Structure formats: C-alpha cells, structure tokens
Image (cartoon, rainbow, N blue to C red; front, side):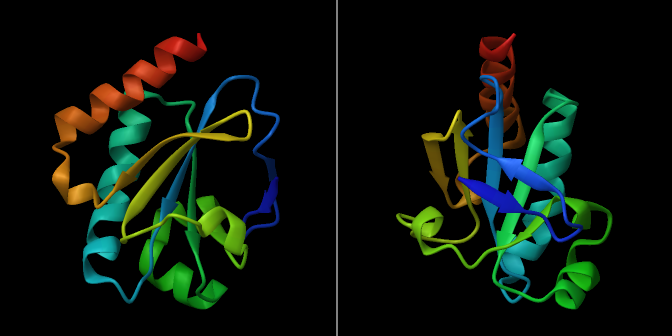
Length: 128
C-alpha cells in the first residue's frame, strides 16, 4: 500500500526494509488528538531519530498546517478506508512493518511516555 504525504512524498508501506512505520490516526477536531500528536511524535523521534511517522487525517491541507505545525510534512490526507479499519478511537497508532500491521495502540492516553518510548525502542532494535 502506498500513501502520499501532504507535501507530495510517496511512502510504500509494503517496502520498508523491516523498519516500522508509525501511523497515527488523528483529527484536529479531536482535542486530545491535537494535544497528544506533537508529544507522541517527539517521543518517537527521541527513541528513534530515523523513524517514519505518518499522521493520517481526513482534514484539508490548510487545517493540517494550522493544527500540526512542525509535523505537517508527516501528514497523509487519508481517504483510504482499508487502512482505517479497526481504528476504534482517536488517537490511535498502528505500527506497520513491511506492509503488515504489527501492533495497534488505541487511545494513547493509556500509555505513559516511558511505556511508549520502550515500544518504539523495541521496534528500533529489531530493525537493526
């Protein structure tokens, strides 16, 4: 499966060379999402500076820029129903390795920063 970021880059989820791709499902209209997304993205980059993070939203490019600032380059304007299957709550993260969803984390608030960092570090170490 291929996804296009808001800035035009193409990401092929099936061909990541074993590196995880973090798909964050979010919405600017979701207060918790808008608050948590930058913190989660920073936590992922702290644990793995080479991580590929994509935030999937159904919003417009202008809405994305206003709400996600420095992380806009990681945004996918998502209209792909298949990849949204089993997203039960927002925010949700799906960790995809070579096109396969390896783990789904529904509701990020249930995980501390330390727990989430540990998850990312385990994927980073497995990919190396």
